[in-house]
Length: 517
Image (cartoon, rainbow, N blue to C red; front, side):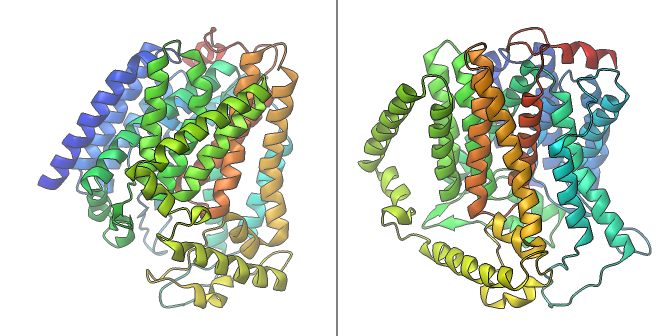
């Protein structure tokens, strides 16, 4: 417990500094009342988690606090993104007499039960037509993908290679969890954000939480100490991988409360993409630069190649999609060239280049070889079961089992195609491509009449494009999965902004309505 107190003090100290320095920036995008409440809830949950000997004691405090905050908050999606990774998403089984377990509970599901689902329920009861619009193409595609997941049973990859049979209970469980984990998230985001201000406020809340994570990540790598690892081991000692110190070369890769260094890198890459839009609303130059440097400090501390490439891709995509794209692209290329030049002559640059095989790096090159083998083996199995996949694919990939005892499917597209076939992959890709298309079309249509709204669309399209690039080199898990559906929801909401959409900084009809619910 003494170790947890020390870790808590460090986390609270770092967060206090970041919240204090970032307050003036945050208040440009959200009310002082909402900012203060979200910050207090963040600290309350953090302190409770570090001092709680079990997840259930934490949940006893978190559930009423989250329900209260969700009802009070003028923008529940901003609250959700602020608290999405306040603690690691440590899975804890809910035991039930007679069936072994009901399902696993973690911070993601607590937020869904306490914030998202109540918000969705209030939306369904609302008489505002902007919020209760009928199901659209993206809804049908997502529900179709959910139907495929519910219908096709994938046995868990157990250490003893035992194949558990499916059952009616399992089918009902998969359907329920798809609603809780996926559709409730997409529905709440796509229907709650009925004007540009609410979207911008949610982006700012996510950036604020990510800035705290980035600062803590820098400390973890500098001190070679993962501050949230003991919490995971204390709550669920049967998941030792949550306590692993992942290294690359001689560097400890930070993970903070994301659950994994890859997930941390992805979250910070998306936050960087959001900040590219938000920074245009900050008149002072130095705060804009400091936030960029802080987010990249976290990205470097995560020491994950995919998110680095994804963040760079988002940077260039945002420049290409915004107004005056040609000069912006030239400027972006110039900035990138200067940074590469500066890094190449520094010790930090040498560390970065050493892990990039494209530039001759050899550190952790075995991961690149593994990905190549995975791609080849996956394609062989996909060809054998092209339409609806092979739900027993794990049993045919023993040659890819790693030292940790797992088959690491570090390619989201290959994973979907393996288990759900090209039918499932087509629906999965069509869903997110529809989001890109809708947001891009709306962004282009407002390029002359409302440049700020157009730039917001460019930010969303660039972030989704970066996500599509990053999930090609990572499993579809943790923050990758959650932000994938959040971004899709933002794109759908943005595409449906009507005449009532107001520029960021204007009065939010969302704020008025939620307070009357």
